Image (cartoon, rainbow, N blue to C red):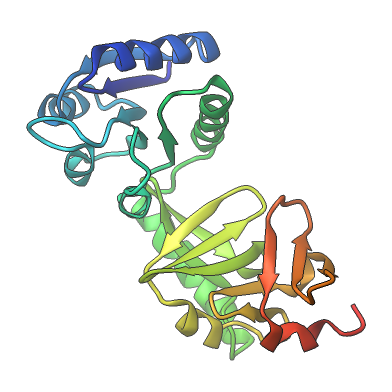
Length: 251
């Protein structure tokens, strides 16, 4: 049975989250509910749950501080009223970052991600090392460009093949990597990553964005000569700066 811990210092919001989880995932066993970060950390260490839903701003210890000390394979979801901690949350390996007030449609998407992650087998450290070695050997057989990017997602290490990437976007000192059904934040700057990617496959379209050409569905220029591109299978519309529009002649 899948288990979870809920931590929120506001009782009504904690009840709201529990009710949403019980409605959308009745099989989920909530083993503890907490009102502060220290208790949350202790309960997670005690029960070793599959999932911890953590508020960020709690007394005694914040959700982010508790997450830094949580060991094992517990997946983290931050549920908060504040939208200014997303980068820190994903840096702690969060599976998702949900804003209050809680909406059932949004929580449903989070639970879908969690169930998919649970369906995947978490590799042991030794298996992870073997995969990394194998992928590195494959890369050295075709020298010059990256074949995969290693990213921490939750308590897992994911090996993302570059062909899976839809686009990369700089975000302060991080790079946001977006695929068809997931995203990750990587510490390496976009300029460094771009230098290691095949320029025939990845085009810079803006000072902050690099796209996978194979994922482009169409490019549209409006009356003001502003261009945007639509990527296959994604709702995102990517802006193309004037300096890079010449790449799209003939597309």
